[in-house]
Length: 152
Image (cartoon, rainbow, N blue to C red; front, side, top):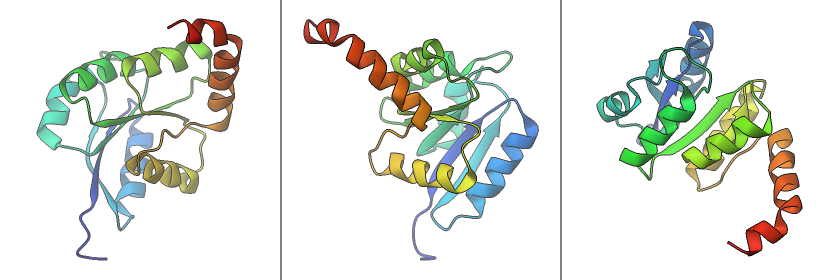
């Protein structure tokens, strides 16, 4: 397993304790490593270009550069890069703004570390991880808007 190429992850989060905890969690894994941790998404494209990650873990509410704008800019420049939102916001507006920006998944920060790692690995395998409460809101929206979706 030592010969395995580790997946590279970058973190954008304004909470220093959270950045440090996520960095440590990722670096304890045999298959992943944190290659950058940033306090804001203001320079998201330059940060991604400098670190060349395989995935971005993106907070939404950060001073100077919010995660939804950062995600849009990252996806414009790196359309195949996996961006997973990780936030405290579980309201429909934030969820759908993140999805429209190009997020590949949406996880709440209260997700346990073992579940978070499981969902990160799921995203690396092509999945779109969502916290259960978020998935329910997405499915509810899609169910209520079937006609709208069928006409698109």
